[in-house]
Length: 249
Image 1 (cartoon, rainbow, N blue to C red):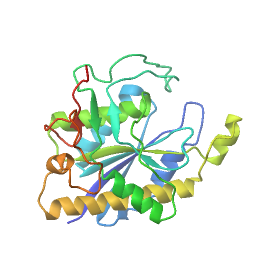
Image 2 (cartoon, helix red, strand yellow):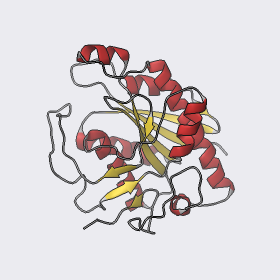
Image 3 (cartoon, rainbow, N blue to C red):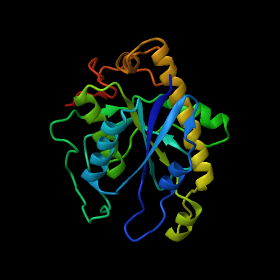
């Protein structure tokens, strides 16, 4: 049975005409492994970006959501382990909004752990010659906000969808325009890394479906080699595709 993966890139920054994440998403094939790829561009706006992804989830009913965003300083692709319920923006979004020292969702848990097979994604990318490593925090700005907001919607809607975020490097042109020697990667290599990541996600989904298992149980497993072992005391047993983390006092 063919599945659907919603892949999301950001539209260009206000005043610019190019976004490497959106270009990489647009250039993806229609199918990866046994999954149809649904492509989406979202605005660089705090709440509207989350709303756009939620609308696409409701329209397409995918089995997985993979969010793609840039991060200055990345030397490769980095699937994110966690999104925090916290925003402290260093830069404004495309409408000039710059939320600081506030929650993404005041009623939500402290954090969500990704439900994507992040170690499997990294392993496949490295085998394909694409630099990659797991990152353990999506930051505290827009990208983190979108990862958290999407996971929170999925949890509250009790939908069986896995979701997460992958950060990618700046392009050579972006690095050059910054005036600093910031690590970079071509859009073609970014697209290659994203496509290989989606292969890992599709294979993981087939595994879930073949075992008729819910992502909820897989997320809480300490035996799943595709993800970090969740054996520490601050993880809860209640989960809907991202694992809520108890507030640490």
